[in-house]
Image (cartoon, rainbow, N blue to C red; front, side, top):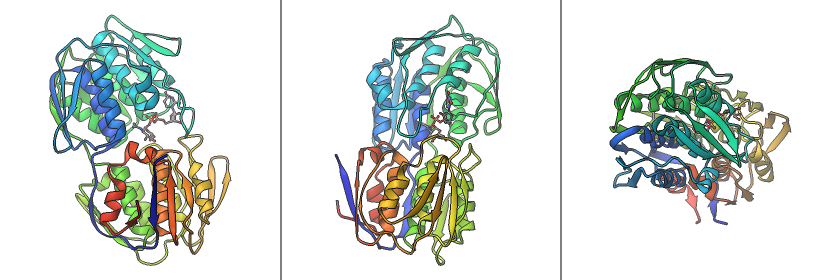
Length: 415
Ligand code: UD1
């Protein structure tokens, strides 16, 4: 299994660019199924998950190909196929994003149930409730979700929980529905707003983006357009913590500070130095960080995707921090690995009590999911000696050249 070794104890200093957001690019790619003609997406990160979505589009007869400079050209001029291949959906949950666009565009979608993953069971009931509300016939047979409709009809729909994926899937489907759809209690993550802007540029009528109620007036067709993917707030946050945990001074540019507000507030509360500009953020060490409590919540709350990295920072903080995971049921797999590096952590159901220690020690550790991988690399950067991180494939799914970016800031990556 691919692994990475690094020598800890090197102070990270310098400037680094955030890549485009994985979680924005994936639904944007799925949305091209709705659009006739040619789309050009720029600032797309070079990642395994993006490749999986490209394969999915091609399997559905929507031609997608990587071009130079992180661009993807998508040509949707042929009859779209409506059966999503099993191996692509089970390889990546976000493949389920094609369900809403396929249903709206072709009136039929057959997509395998994505199944659980290492951070929890991750049902899709909210996606299906939304499709039903729009008038689709929904059935689950032989492990496949089958969706059918003659024409989706606008509706008023309240989401029991502001799920990011369900908001995106239902919003995409509603763009080609007949009449008006009002979705209440939607997720407000910046990636949803980015998707909304792309759909609007293609001819959709959407209001309320970034609020808890989105209104969509259906249209008959959408036309291919050009869009630049927003910067990855999670990658930017991870790089900022890399600066903080190594007692360094790191500036991340092409980042949107408002997208990282909850993290930046916490870094400030820890006593780290911060300078915020419209398109970049600088974090610098000003003495040992103070422990802070964290609870993950839907946006604009603290992101679950930054919980693991923040836990690494807290292992070296002054005092004790309570970290509560409210979004996913099983997202503390990194805690056991951090403990192997000398961290003092007590787990109790959905909370972790992290008491800062003076030093972590390098160890062999195992990555169980994407963000856990980032957390272990951050801990390794600060630890004494050499850390070897096993299971690198998880990291490659969602971080665009993270080891290389850390190296450019002064990290000693041994290969
Ligand atoms: C997206 C992000 C992921 C992030 C998560 C929460 C992408 C590709 N992934 O995942 O990185 O960690 O948001 O910010 O954008 N749920 C249900 N029923 C549903 C849907 C969700 O019960 O139909 C539950 C999930 O099990 C989970 C919670 O809602 O406990 C949040 O999930 P959701 O917001 O849907 O996350 P994803 O879209 O899967």
